[in-house]
Length: 267
Image (cartoon, rainbow, N blue to C red; front, top):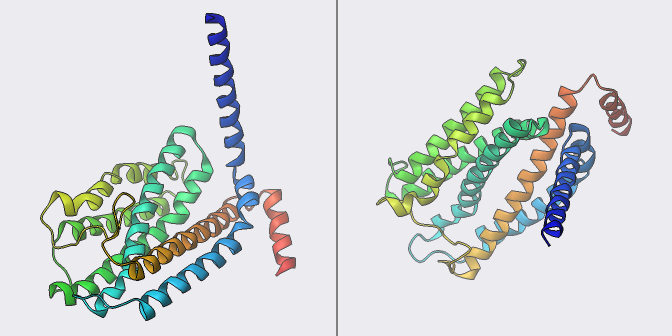
């Protein structure tokens, strides 16, 4: 009985070890480029379709809010950008752990690729939030807990990008950026729960997985469609930018030279 349990444990350990080794083989730079390159056109096409439907529905056909009237419609840009800014930074932290612990070089390249995207979305969320705040609160900015923590997130993004640039040509390239990404992730729950922990002007979540939406279906359905479209768009941009970095970093390798020749003939 004991021997059978020991054999099962060893067998399970061997299976997961082989699974992990197989995973590591698929995240090499060449394998990443080969596997994910074809995805870009499909993801971007789906993104444009979803965003087109969601934005047109939200801005043109969704009913006006009974209090905020048409000014609330900026939510169809503000909410997706704010949500993605947080999601991408969480991705940076996870990629930082993978890079530091398992030395997966592709994780570092993906992090470098998505950091500017997250920064841009964070800035857009702050700008659209300020525009929305003017008719709602009577001012473009208050040192509200949610707004302040989102501003800190923008500075964290800027710091990560600066570290990637500063250590571009050194042996410790990406390590400092990974550490800041991991440490800075403590700001994410502050952003998420700031409206619950403190008395803030910012409204609570529009809808969550566990609760009923706080707006009618004519409003939250186009918002959800737009958010999904934004996620597809970011995925396509992340793959495209990562592949560009791979070609740049490994420009002296034969497979990259052959790929560049193929692309030149194609286009």
